[in-house]
Amino acid sequence: MPKRYDRTASAPTLEFMRCKDCDMYGLCRLASNGEDANVTNALVKRRFVLRRGEYLYRSGDSFHEIYAVRHGSIKTYIYSDDGKTQITGFHGHGEIVGLDALDGMRFASEAIVLETTNICEVSFPHFQELSRNIPELQNQMLAIMSHAILRGQQMMLLLGKKNATERLATYLMSISRKIDKNKLSLPSYKLTMSRRDVGNYLGLTQETVCRILARFQEDGIIKVEGKYIYFFDIDRLTELTSQGRTEHVADLFEPSPRCLT
Amino acid sequence: MPKRYDRTASAPTLEFMRCKDCDMYGLCRLASNGEDANVTNALVKRRFVLRRGEYLYRSGDSFHEIYAVRHGSIKTYIYSDDGKTQITGFHGHGEIVGLDALDGMRFASEAIVLETTNICEVSFPHFQELSRNIPELQNQMLAIMSHAILRGQQMMLLLGKKNATERLATYLMSISRKIDKNKLSLPSYKLTMSRRDVGNYLGLTQETVCRILARFQEDGIIKVEGKYIYFFDIDRLTELTSQGRTEHVADLFEPSPRCLT
DNA sequence: TCATTTTATTGATCCAGATCATGATTGTCT
DNA sequence: AGACAATCATGATCTGGATCAATAAAATGA
Image 1: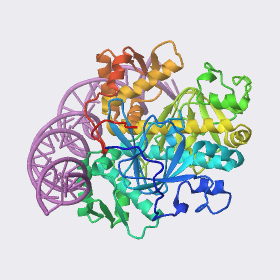
Image 2 (image 1 turned 180 degrees about the vertical axis):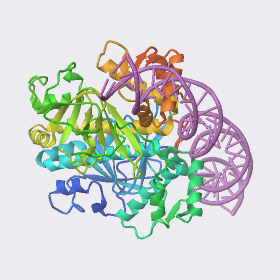
Image 3 (image 1 turned 45 degrees about the vertical axis):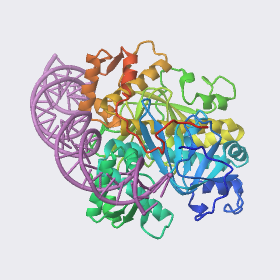
Image 4 (image 1 turned 30 degrees about the vertical axis):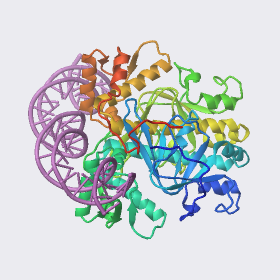
């Protein structure tokens, strides 16, 4: 049974507090004006906890806050007219969600929590107020939004041009990069989402996801143990993200060399 | 033979000057502070013309300006590691391009002109300067970028969950909506891009695009005459954008009714 | 603990759309 | 105008991944 979250929930006991890894760190630091952004925080006025299955926001909710995942994971998705669902992202430690609501001031997507998750909340009016005195804050925000646009473009490439193997490899590599970034000691990762959700995100079925994960394991690239993935051969995985076989070309008005200037 | 554009090119003879239809109009009006944004323009300091096959920007170019298409059309695209191309958008009258460069201050995509095209140029430093005195300018920009993120999400849905018919229908409907918005008298449209490019954009081959356009014509929904499309039955086209057949569900933790709050 | 539901896995079959192939148009250049 | 190249159209065939099916393994809950 789905529940709205209770914003008065008790304070989280945090295992991870590495604000420096967070995509919002730039904003937090600017807002706190050099003071320690880890403890006193001028930008983030509130943090709260959600449990598996609870919504962070729903489609149509009016927009007041931007969120960052402090610890845990969530998924975001949209609906088509006929009720089909497209997962638009999985978001873990340090990732920002809610940026799609700034146009129209209503959430177009939904965000649901995949495990017990700590959220940092930034009031948008408060952000605007701070921006007046700290112009650089605005630039940071534009950069963050631009980055989200780039992510969308990369997903278009994945969904439009890559085959099933390349899609899975690309997704696993993005996970691997997060592990590196967050300096988790073990090259392993717990998939908090189902195979079906991975498939939905990548434009595949759950069966195809299973089969390809099994094949990667056979080939000694990863080890799959239920929800856990162990990364064995990152180099081979990298190769698989794009095979350089089929050239899905567009009309470029130029058969010949690229740059003349 | 590809050429860089010559920014000293002669001034355009404009057929369309309806700034009010432009996505940048909100910015222009705010910047000009109530004065007629159509003639004197505080935000757009320069306009120029490009011809078919010329680049507006290329991947890796350093970012200084944002652009709006005043008249004409361009396409934007990115490359994968192995040289595959994904067209990320076709942009006509009133549409803004270049927003993906704000993260990293370099263009990640390329923009190439499909026909003789007038471009409005906004210097980003100039925009920043104006924003200091006009905070609302920043909100407008955030809304514009948020809208671009939404577009990306819709494309993920199209590429991840829609079949070929639905993709074409969706694309034709987006064209139809532009015609309405720009109040072009005839329900017709000139496709300035090739079938191959349409296919590339929609994750299909040129053959599939041809066949489905032919089928739409047989069914009396449109008429295809070379580069021109005539819209006959918008209602039927709308139905075809999503058929409501296959439910590509994600795991939602809830088989039952939606909202409890 | 065991019963029930959800999720994962693996095999067999099918089909939408890719690929291959061949002309017909259309556009461009001299 | 005529020649050449690019683009469009349409038929024949092939195939990657979907669909269907049937357990197995986990998670959930009483």
